[in-house]
Image (cartoon, rainbow, N blue to C red):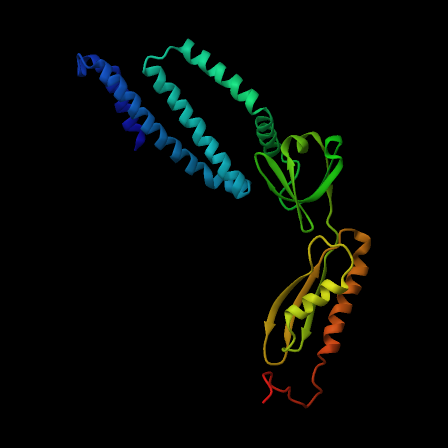
Length: 277
């Protein structure tokens, strides 16, 4: 729908002498305003059309940033065309653009470096979201490692346990990247009495589990009825060699809960839970 409108604006501008003799200047300025409004609409539509394609390849924050950059570049192109129609000479545009580029480049040198490094990382894709990697370089004070949570235009976000590391794109691009295979996860399903509280089990895990883990041990309630509570407990150690010790500590915590809340003997009915009379 916008294509015929754009064609009509250009035809009116090209034949302004025959359509509105004596009002050529007004037609020129009107064409500039119309092109700016139309360019804004076209840039918005292009950004919206590119959004779903970017979301399939990138995380939401990066996709939205790239969509904004696409709209910005499209709008700048339309603005340059409108200024050319307004009578601004190419030499003036080139001189003004060069001066602006120098000023902006000096003021935002580090920002632009991170921006271009982020674009290189997105195109080369040396790592993916969810992978555990180690970056080794002198400007990183040795190394930095963690699970890649997001790859933006300025920073690579790493998760290391409960900590979040923001790594500048320039440092990530200059570093040696070593993929790390995550250790095997310790995963258990426990059937407990229905009166067991998940908060009590979580406190026991926090007290008894001493092995360093990627994240705190997770408890997921799978089912609950009158007879039993079924929970899934999982945790991943930082090092492969700590897997058996982590499993032993998780089993010890589950055993402590079972010992504190023993199952009723066969043939007996568990007493209803509630305040005593």
